[in-house]
Image (tube, rainbow, N blue to C red):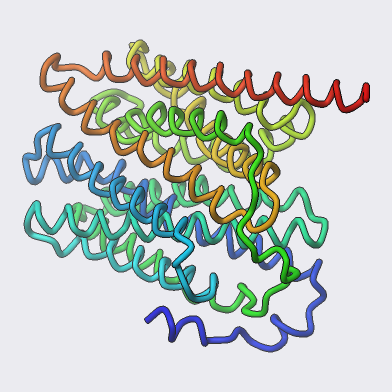
Length: 405
């Protein structure tokens, strides 16, 4: 299927006759739709659907965590596959194949009848989302840098927030109409499938980067610190992101928290990218980690609807900002093709987020509360912020000596 998709050239007026700078906007929009479909819907629609599944099927918290971890294991293995030098084929073909696999596995959840099927489908969806995020980010960041459009990456990364908003409204609307979790999954898959057609039209097939950029990239030693911090961020955000609707269940904020997460995520990328341009990406990453730690802690310390909503805004307002800052900084620290560096970042992130839901589910069984796992996640974010701050200081010191020499 990938080979067939790779040969589907976009319409000539998009690939050949539109100036590169104008085509950059179309490419950023396609990146937005790709991340909206695979991350905002494919990855995160599980959160608003989860309470309906739990009620209808009687799922235990460890089972809920296991389903989430299956998706994240697929994400990890998908990131490892993308990082492999043996991965052949064009980036556009893999992007389209990943989008299709994500949509089909998302819709398939509405037809599944066993735990084994849930695990398999979420695993496939995780592999697909890793392929799409890494390849779309590499493709978009490369070409936008080439044509001098430094602000457009914010549009690409805003897709996850838009997808979260869309999925939250979709699930809420279907639930209000009396439709259950199966219809919610099927509708989500159908919506994601539309992104395949849009990406086919907007993503050019012809390479726009010089041949030298196709070689494996060399990375800066500071990338190691960034990778570790990014992995801790993966663990730190995922427990709240997975269980927030469950934590807020039976409170006045129940129907609003996930919508608040998505709405705050949409502008967050532009805000954090702007902060990164002002104080440096690593320093901005550290600040965003501290902000998200406060939101994660508040999710289990808050006692009223206002506290839950503030927690949702702090979480949504940092998830994609941190993702964008991390990947943009990794791209900046890499010479040549950034795919391997971006994939290593994604691997570290996926290890952290794969551990989180199962860890939370087991502690919930022992304590009857999400307080301990959530506070552990907040602590991980504080450590991530400290590591990123060290990377920022390292860059400041290096810049000082370069200026003095």
